[in-house]
Length: 227
Image (tube, rainbow, N blue to C red):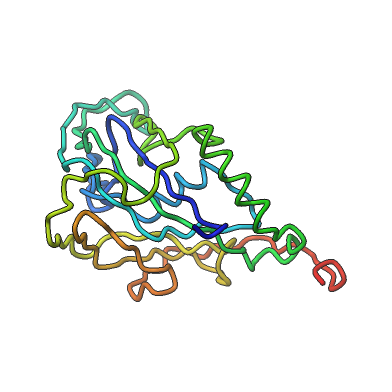
């Protein structure tokens, strides 16, 4: 294992990796598989510093994909409650492999780029179940993590050849991580082979849509501070 890579098991009773198309009518329906952005957020809940950016290499689906619909009464913006139907994934478990890279948009933190230090801290945080609460796509879906070697154990889809999920949301390009002044959504053609989903790197996603102008304040750094 590389010293900037972690492998872990992610599981929970319910998950809601919302398909953006279903948000329009106020009722949410989950993707059948997690998005890159959701797994990145979960990994950041385990351990995160502005010095690093987590890159999700791949995930492995362990349990059979099944859904369950629930009647929900969300709060309306103009007061009161409404009645909606949310469709969740049920009894989920995944194995995740991820690694971190340096955030080059933060040259002021160049002196903090100590690979062994961040790896050791991430490993300890993972052994404790993460630094922050784990949520599987939505606040009401509590998740849990523990160290586990990627590929260990038996998965439901180990003998299946492939599944195609078509165009799927991948993640966001944030100006705090990418040299851009716009918030951009990425998409990709998702597929699963023998239970494993290998995500393309963010910069390799060719389908993008600009959402809005979005800028962050750049830190003031002197040359001697980053040398």
